[in-house]
Image: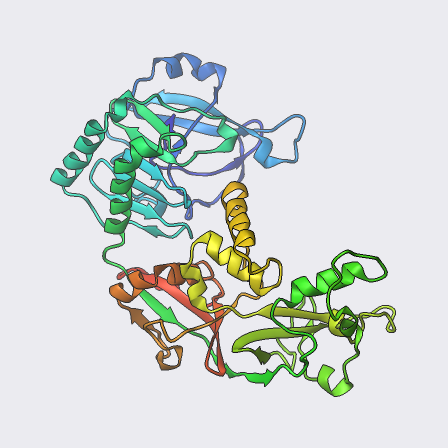
Length: 452
């Protein structure tokens, strides 16, 4: 196991002659690497190395003979190893941003949510969240670091055996302690025993972001056209499931026929079709004149689009209910629900599951057992009055979300954060606000809350 303190990348040929020069390491992250192979010339010195020795070496990517064009399949080989004594001459002064701390890691925590906390020997905390943003301005005092080490001693962490997996699978959720030895312990199967330490790791993540604040920002606003749904014979609620069942029974005998299925083949008048947004998967519809036409039914809001292509044009589904794609627009606070309840609500709104308690409990069991999860494929939500901020009142530069408001609706704001690159569209009243973002702002660090 090698902890990288600095690095410099070069593209070389088999004779180690530089093919491409220039520093390409600005975005590099120094970390702990597992090296499986060393060259023959370095074997003797590598076998004599001890914990905390500082070395210089070359990490070569050895081409895979069976898959020479696949860089990921290449093997890392450590070559030209030599022990370093005295003052260390690093490649970069000042250090690269991702290699700024050279005091050495004392622990690393990798969470189930794909976030990570690293604590260095000088007390520096580096937190990487699930969106791969790094926060590294906070530091533990010597007393706080000692108290943290006592927590590991109290948990008898040293008695746990280190876990080792195949290197190509990478690190797994767990805690790595670099104290008397390198000890990587996975969370799987040890959740109860490690719970107190995991709680301390989460506290460290909170500490690392204690100086930050959250900003709610929106893009342009567009007026919506919300029309009442005019066809009582076919409801929008549960439409997707109803359409699938009706289509399956066409021309076939079924024990439980879909009621009123023949109505699905009624053709729409041209005037109605001309008001519908076009459904064209994977295509840019930003210039669709009906882009902001929505329908309401029973107090709920729906996005109704019509399939643009029909071949042959006289097919039973052309210009009929079968040509529609209907998506309910859920309230944003659906994100506050558990995964099981959220999945049930979305599937029920689309007619994929019934209202009975038996179906609900069966779905809950499958969500837990199989990890099922339904997503809002539309990606648009209704912003409700329960939220502490009104989108219409946001200034051009956004508004700070107070900590109490953030904690009260944390699941909502975290869900929006996942779309930070482009934001999501939110509906408030009869207006849609495009590219709404929640950004975690770190004073002294360049703001990255603009749409990319």
